[in-house]
Structure formats: C-alpha cells, structure tokens
Length: 338
Image 1: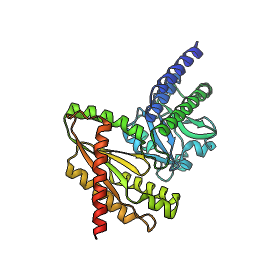
Image 2: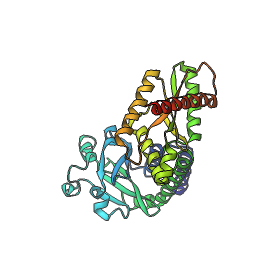
Image 3: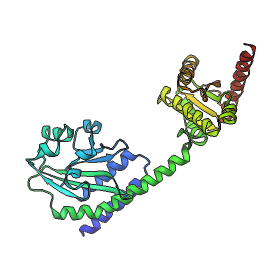
C-alpha cells in the first residue's frame, strides 16, 4: 500500500514538473514530493551546484527566506565531507564535531537552525544527472521520536531515481527551449523569440496606454571587418556588441540579434530622450572597448509605439528600418564631408 502512495506522489511530481518552465519551481516540487513521501521531514531545502562551484539554496521549506541568499563551497558541504557526495546519509543531532564539518563560517543554515527549532535529524541525498552531482536534497526532522533511519534511506533511494529522471528531463527540455529562443553566437534572444515577446508587450501597451520606443541597429562597416580581418573578427564584433547591450541595458529593456549584424531594442515605457540616452551610452561603451580590428559603431532607427496606432510588429520594424538607413546615409555623408 505504501509503495502505491509513493508511486502516486512520484507520478504527480513528474506531471507538475512537465508543465513548468521555471527551474526554481522544479526544485520546490522536488522538495515537496520528498517531504511528502518521507513524512518525518517537517523542514527541508535543496542545494544546487552552480557554475561557480558553490552550492546555492534554491528551495526551502520551514526556514527564513534569507537562506535563499546563501551559498556554500562544494568542499564545505557536509555530504561532501562525509562521503564525497557519493550516497545518502543521515546526521543525528547534537553533533559534537560541528566545528570541524562546518568551518569557515560556511553554514548560514546551521546559524538559522540554532535560532529556530531544534533539529534532531537530517537526511542528505545527492541528486545526479549524467553522472554529475547537480543538487542535494536536505530533509530535516525536529521530532525526537521521528529520527530518520535505514527505512527512510531506502525510501529516498527509491525516489532518488525518479527525482533524477524528472530533473534530467526538465534540464534537457530547458536546453532545447534555450536553443530555440536564443542566438547561438551572442546568446541574445533571436528574431523569433523577440517578436513573440514583443507581441505580448504590444498588448500590455494597449492595456496600460504607455509609450515605448523600438530601435533597430545595424553595425557600420561590418563587411569591411569580415573582408579585411576574417569572419572570426566579425564574430568578435558581434559578441562585443551583444556584451554592450547586456552591460548597458536593464531588465526593463528587451533586446535581440535579429540577423547578421542587425540588432533590436525595445525600450519599455520610455521617452524618446531616455531611449537616445541609452543608445549613446552603448556607443560610448563600444568606443572604449573596441580594438583596432574591431572598431565598432552603428547606425540606428527609432520608432515610437503607443498601443493606439495599431501597427503590426512588421510595420513597426519596417519604420525603424527606414529611419535606421536614413541615419546611416546621413552619417556616411557627414564622414565623407569631413
């Protein structure tokens, strides 16, 4: 009977994970399922190993949200010290050697535990994907009569395989979504995803009646860079341009590589002056960060959108394109005259 309950919970977990595109929500679902199956746990967390080689708290239950701001070095994690993240283990409190295992002020979690309920037992379970540890599920019990035991380890081993499969499937789908929506070279949004997000923004502008601006950007003399220094230098120029956008724009701006040396920016809820100011900041960044081979500048065309004129995305981009080539001609004429 207990196996059927576990299978039902695992099925529910897999179904929930398959319908979300939020990684943080996936970790929350995993934690909820583990705590539901191993009912002795009344608190818990999920540590995720990130690219910086630190474990970060990505899901918590029963602890202050401050825990989500903490990270722990891989080698300072208890499970690493105990068995190099090789297998599930149980820690029973009090633990006299705590100072040896949690040195260098790494465990903000322990500090929080000491302020909160007295933890009696902790179950640590590593999660592997493609033979690499990606996360640790930590289950905590505060009841002296509900200490974790070998039976709980057996349960955790049973569900661990399903947790790993569910996470692997989600990460694979996430990667496919990323490939479908991002430009391979610059890692910016591609044309398709920009137009998709832009269509939603237009609906939002129609609802809120605010004004935004779209800038279409075309690098100057990009063909010259490719022809004289090679396509690798041309790629570097595109990457530098993408970095200029990332560094100098914020979450209020939507930007993408449209094709070739053409980029686009949506300045949400902005005046013309604000949009131009940001464009000038990007130009200044390029001037300060370019090399002799990659002297990058660009022409741009701006168009105002207000959600009232009912222009389609293609019509908006067409107007911006015309304004951009007007800017390119004027700048070329100015350069030739000087």
